[in-house]
Amino acid sequence: MGEAADLNRGLWPESQPIGSHYSVTEALPKILNLLKKYDIQVTYFIESWNLERYPSAIADEVAGAGHEVGWHAYQHEAWYQLDAAAERENFKRSFDALNEFIAPGSPGEGKVGLYKGFRPPGGPIHHPRTLELCHQYGLQYISAAAEHAALQSSLAVLPYRWRNVDAYFYMDTFGKLRILKGENDSKPIGEHELVRRWKADIDHAIERGEFLSMLFHPFLTTSEERLSAIEDVVSYLAQKRDEGAIW
Image (cartoon, rainbow, N blue to C red; front, side, top):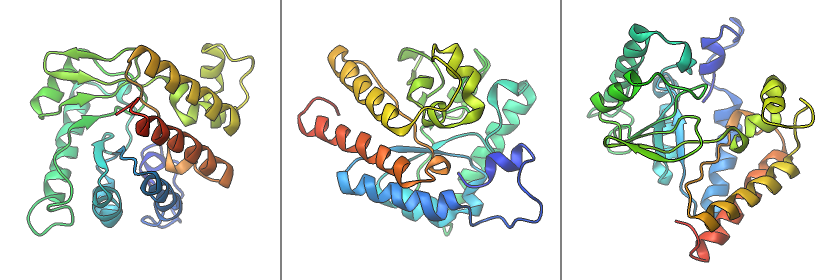
């Protein structure tokens, strides 16, 4: 959400103010309106840094609409690059920020709950220390890059596949990954192909009774075509829900 990732990577211009990022002020309301239209609830994994910068968007717009607020590191740190000390500090800093945000008299009081799920930026985690920290901080599930859902001790593993992430289709920087995953070339893939493939993935998951996670990023929702792609997928999910095929 917002400027978190760019700030962490040193890409945000020093002259640019913080607190009015288009992904929050423009893209997020449009996406939330679509979800409301089709009565679909989602989990929005948000960096804890944003709790102080965008309190109303998180507490009122996201949580207030019935969506889960998940944890996405403190400032979108690439999780696989963290050593043990940095990983522990990221947990502590993030959960301290959340506890302050939901404390009595704070913006999130009664609106945002304790984190249940964690999606590590970048995909991979450190086994087993990440899982041990998840248990220590009371998390119920983790959503890292992997192929199959599983249960590790009392922690549910609800993975995502890169082919079900919008960034895989849209971002130039994912060119090498596209080649690695078997695409014909490294060029970005359009919205229509995303929708076609994701509908097929939904059908496949229903047929096999599998878990499926699909990821849309507000900061990548920069055109009406991309917003329409979200609506196409969301409306298809709503259709399958109404048919009793998914829950």
